[in-house]
Length: 234
Figure 1 (tube, rainbow, N blue to C red):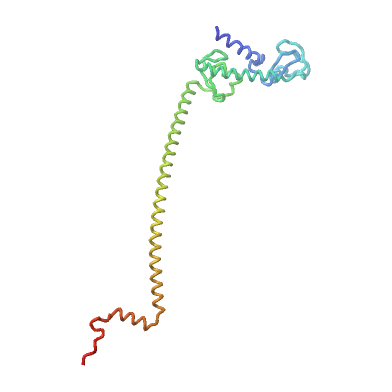
Figure 2 (figure 1 turned 90 degrees about the vertical axis):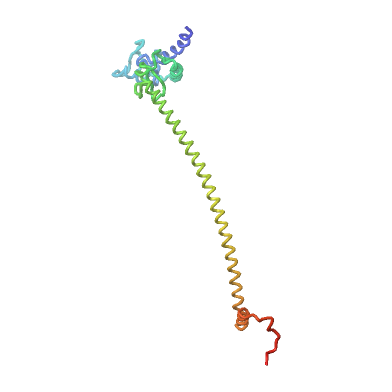
Protein backbone atom coordinates (compact mmCIF):
# COMPACT_ATOMS: atom_id res chain seq x y z
CA UNK A 1 0.00 0.00 0.00
CA UNK A 2 2.77 2.41 0.92
CA UNK A 3 4.59 1.50 -2.30
CA UNK A 4 1.49 2.36 -4.35
CA UNK A 5 1.23 5.73 -2.58
CA UNK A 6 4.87 6.52 -3.33
CA UNK A 7 4.47 5.60 -7.01
CA UNK A 8 1.19 7.48 -7.56
CA UNK A 9 2.64 11.05 -7.48
CA UNK A 10 5.34 9.98 -9.88
CA UNK A 11 2.75 8.50 -12.24
CA UNK A 12 0.69 11.69 -12.02
CA UNK A 13 3.76 13.71 -12.96
CA UNK A 14 4.50 11.37 -15.86
CA UNK A 15 0.94 11.70 -17.12
CA UNK A 16 1.23 15.49 -17.01
CA UNK A 17 4.45 15.26 -19.00
CA UNK A 18 2.99 12.87 -21.61
CA UNK A 19 1.64 13.99 -24.99
CA UNK A 20 -1.95 12.73 -25.58
CA UNK A 21 -1.14 12.04 -29.24
CA UNK A 22 2.10 10.01 -29.17
CA UNK A 23 1.74 8.96 -25.51
CA UNK A 24 5.40 9.78 -24.92
CA UNK A 25 7.10 12.59 -23.04
CA UNK A 26 6.48 15.98 -24.66
CA UNK A 27 9.06 17.08 -27.21
CA UNK A 28 9.04 20.85 -27.65
CA UNK A 29 5.59 21.20 -26.02
CA UNK A 30 3.18 23.87 -27.32
CA UNK A 31 -0.14 25.10 -25.90
CA UNK A 32 -3.29 25.65 -28.00
CA UNK A 33 -5.84 28.39 -27.45
CA UNK A 34 -8.03 25.88 -25.61
CA UNK A 35 -5.27 25.22 -23.08
CA UNK A 36 -4.32 21.69 -24.12
CA UNK A 37 -0.69 20.77 -24.74
CA UNK A 38 0.94 18.69 -27.49
CA UNK A 39 4.33 18.05 -29.02
CA UNK A 40 4.91 20.57 -31.80
CA UNK A 41 5.61 17.75 -34.26
CA UNK A 42 2.49 15.82 -33.18
CA UNK A 43 0.09 18.75 -33.57
CA UNK A 44 1.62 19.72 -36.90
CA UNK A 45 1.11 16.17 -38.10
CA UNK A 46 -2.51 16.20 -36.92
CA UNK A 47 -3.13 19.45 -38.78
CA UNK A 48 -1.31 18.42 -41.92
CA UNK A 49 -3.31 19.57 -44.95
CA UNK A 50 -5.21 22.26 -43.03
CA UNK A 51 -4.36 25.89 -43.85
CA UNK A 52 -5.70 28.13 -41.07
CA UNK A 53 -8.42 26.88 -38.71
CA UNK A 54 -8.08 23.46 -37.09
CA UNK A 55 -9.49 21.60 -34.11
CA UNK A 56 -7.87 20.45 -30.90
CA UNK A 57 -7.32 16.66 -31.05
CA UNK A 58 -8.40 16.41 -27.42
CA UNK A 59 -11.46 18.68 -27.03
CA UNK A 60 -12.23 19.32 -30.74
CA UNK A 61 -12.41 23.06 -30.17
CA UNK A 62 -11.57 25.14 -33.25
CA UNK A 63 -8.25 26.96 -32.89
CA UNK A 64 -5.88 28.97 -35.07
CA UNK A 65 -2.67 27.20 -36.12
CA UNK A 66 -0.61 30.37 -35.91
CA UNK A 67 -1.47 30.80 -32.22
CA UNK A 68 0.72 27.95 -30.97
CA UNK A 69 2.60 29.02 -27.86
CA UNK A 70 5.72 27.29 -26.62
CA UNK A 71 5.20 25.99 -23.08
CA UNK A 72 8.58 26.36 -21.35
CA UNK A 73 7.19 25.48 -17.93
CA UNK A 74 5.85 22.18 -19.22
CA UNK A 75 9.21 21.49 -20.87
CA UNK A 76 10.83 21.84 -17.44
CA UNK A 77 8.27 19.45 -15.97
CA UNK A 78 9.14 16.94 -18.70
CA UNK A 79 12.83 17.11 -17.78
CA UNK A 80 11.99 16.54 -14.11
CA UNK A 81 9.76 13.59 -14.99
CA UNK A 82 12.53 12.07 -17.13
CA UNK A 83 15.05 12.34 -14.30
CA UNK A 84 12.63 10.82 -11.80
CA UNK A 85 11.86 8.02 -14.23
CA UNK A 86 15.57 7.28 -14.69
CA UNK A 87 16.17 7.31 -10.93
CA UNK A 88 13.20 5.02 -10.38
CA UNK A 89 14.46 2.62 -13.03
CA UNK A 90 17.89 2.49 -11.40
CA UNK A 91 16.40 2.20 -7.92
CA UNK A 92 13.99 -0.59 -8.74
CA UNK A 93 16.54 -2.26 -10.95
CA UNK A 94 17.74 -4.14 -7.89
CA UNK A 95 14.34 -5.79 -7.72
CA UNK A 96 14.29 -6.26 -11.49
CA UNK A 97 11.07 -4.23 -11.94
CA UNK A 98 10.57 -1.14 -14.11
CA UNK A 99 9.49 1.88 -12.09
CA UNK A 100 7.40 3.21 -15.00
CA UNK A 101 5.52 0.13 -16.17
CA UNK A 102 6.00 -2.40 -13.35
CA UNK A 103 7.43 -4.85 -15.88
CA UNK A 104 10.50 -7.03 -15.46
CA UNK A 105 13.72 -5.31 -16.49
CA UNK A 106 14.86 -7.72 -19.18
CA UNK A 107 16.74 -5.30 -21.45
CA UNK A 108 19.60 -2.83 -21.18
CA UNK A 109 19.88 0.45 -23.11
CA UNK A 110 23.51 1.05 -24.07
CA UNK A 111 23.02 4.75 -24.86
CA UNK A 112 21.39 5.58 -21.51
CA UNK A 113 23.32 2.87 -19.61
CA UNK A 114 20.20 1.77 -17.75
CA UNK A 115 18.02 -1.36 -17.55
CA UNK A 116 14.61 -1.10 -19.24
CA UNK A 117 11.54 -3.25 -19.79
CA UNK A 118 9.96 -4.36 -23.08
CA UNK A 119 7.49 -1.46 -22.94
CA UNK A 120 10.32 1.05 -22.49
CA UNK A 121 11.99 -0.56 -25.50
CA UNK A 122 9.10 0.46 -27.78
CA UNK A 123 8.89 3.99 -26.40
CA UNK A 124 10.20 6.97 -28.34
CA UNK A 125 12.87 7.48 -25.70
CA UNK A 126 14.54 4.16 -26.53
CA UNK A 127 13.27 2.84 -29.87
CA UNK A 128 16.28 4.27 -31.77
CA UNK A 129 18.78 3.12 -29.13
CA UNK A 130 20.90 0.00 -29.04
CA UNK A 131 19.24 -2.46 -26.66
CA UNK A 132 20.63 -5.82 -25.55
CA UNK A 133 19.40 -8.51 -23.11
CA UNK A 134 20.22 -7.54 -19.55
CA UNK A 135 22.05 -10.82 -18.91
CA UNK A 136 24.30 -10.07 -21.86
CA UNK A 137 24.90 -6.59 -20.45
CA UNK A 138 25.81 -8.10 -17.07
CA UNK A 139 28.27 -10.51 -18.68
CA UNK A 140 29.70 -7.66 -20.72
CA UNK A 141 30.13 -5.57 -17.58
CA UNK A 142 31.79 -8.48 -15.77
CA UNK A 143 34.15 -8.91 -18.72
CA UNK A 144 34.87 -5.19 -18.80
CA UNK A 145 35.65 -5.10 -15.08
CA UNK A 146 37.92 -8.13 -15.49
CA UNK A 147 39.81 -6.42 -18.31
CA UNK A 148 40.11 -3.21 -16.26
CA UNK A 149 41.39 -5.21 -13.28
CA UNK A 150 43.95 -7.06 -15.41
CA UNK A 151 45.05 -3.80 -17.01
CA UNK A 152 45.53 -2.19 -13.59
CA UNK A 153 47.60 -5.18 -12.44
CA UNK A 154 49.71 -5.01 -15.60
CA UNK A 155 50.19 -1.29 -15.13
CA UNK A 156 51.32 -1.77 -11.52
CA UNK A 157 53.75 -4.51 -12.64
CA UNK A 158 55.21 -2.31 -15.36
CA UNK A 159 55.55 0.64 -12.99
CA UNK A 160 57.38 -1.58 -10.48
CA UNK A 161 59.69 -2.89 -13.22
CA UNK A 162 60.35 0.68 -14.30
CA UNK A 163 61.33 1.65 -10.75
CA UNK A 164 63.69 -1.36 -10.47
CA UNK A 165 65.33 -0.64 -13.82
CA UNK A 166 65.80 3.02 -12.95
CA UNK A 167 67.41 2.04 -9.64
CA UNK A 168 69.77 -0.37 -11.44
CA UNK A 169 70.58 2.28 -14.01
CA UNK A 170 71.42 4.75 -11.25
CA UNK A 171 73.75 2.24 -9.58
CA UNK A 172 75.42 1.48 -12.92
CA UNK A 173 75.88 5.19 -13.57
CA UNK A 174 77.48 5.66 -10.15
CA UNK A 175 79.85 2.71 -10.78
CA UNK A 176 80.85 4.09 -14.19
CA UNK A 177 81.51 7.54 -12.73
CA UNK A 178 83.62 5.99 -9.95
CA UNK A 179 85.72 4.03 -12.48
CA UNK A 180 86.10 7.11 -14.67
CA UNK A 181 87.28 9.21 -11.73
CA UNK A 182 89.79 6.51 -10.75
CA UNK A 183 91.15 6.29 -14.30
CA UNK A 184 91.38 10.07 -14.56
CA UNK A 185 93.36 10.14 -11.30
CA UNK A 186 95.81 7.50 -12.61
CA UNK A 187 96.22 9.31 -15.90
CA UNK A 188 96.85 12.57 -14.07
CA UNK A 189 99.62 10.94 -12.03
CA UNK A 190 101.23 9.45 -15.14
CA UNK A 191 101.06 12.76 -16.96
CA UNK A 192 102.64 14.49 -13.96
CA UNK A 193 105.53 11.99 -13.88
CA UNK A 194 106.06 12.33 -17.63
CA UNK A 195 106.08 16.12 -17.30
CA UNK A 196 108.75 15.92 -14.60
CA UNK A 197 110.85 13.56 -16.74
CA UNK A 198 110.53 15.82 -19.76
CA UNK A 199 111.57 18.85 -17.68
CA UNK A 200 114.58 16.95 -16.36
CA UNK A 201 115.63 15.90 -19.86
CA UNK A 202 115.20 19.43 -21.18
CA UNK A 203 117.40 20.73 -18.34
CA UNK A 204 120.15 18.28 -19.18
CA UNK A 205 119.96 19.10 -22.87
CA UNK A 206 120.64 22.77 -22.09
CA UNK A 207 124.01 22.01 -20.34
CA UNK A 208 127.37 22.18 -22.27
CA UNK A 209 128.35 19.00 -24.07
CA UNK A 210 131.63 18.62 -22.08
CA UNK A 211 129.80 18.76 -18.79
CA UNK A 212 127.20 16.34 -20.06
CA UNK A 213 129.97 13.90 -21.17
CA UNK A 214 131.81 14.27 -17.86
CA UNK A 215 128.65 13.42 -16.02
CA UNK A 216 128.14 10.42 -18.25
CA UNK A 217 131.74 9.21 -17.75
CA UNK A 218 131.59 9.61 -14.00
CA UNK A 219 128.45 7.56 -14.03
CA UNK A 220 130.23 4.80 -16.02
CA UNK A 221 133.71 4.89 -14.21
CA UNK A 222 133.45 6.08 -10.66
CA UNK A 223 136.84 6.99 -8.96
CA UNK A 224 137.96 4.37 -6.42
CA UNK A 225 138.66 5.78 -2.95
CA UNK A 226 141.82 3.58 -2.65
CA UNK A 227 143.40 5.08 -5.74
CA UNK A 228 142.56 8.65 -4.98
CA UNK A 229 145.64 10.70 -3.82
CA UNK A 230 148.30 7.97 -4.59
CA UNK A 231 151.44 8.92 -6.60
CA UNK A 232 152.24 6.92 -9.66
CA UNK A 233 154.80 4.12 -9.24
CA UNK A 234 158.30 4.53 -10.80
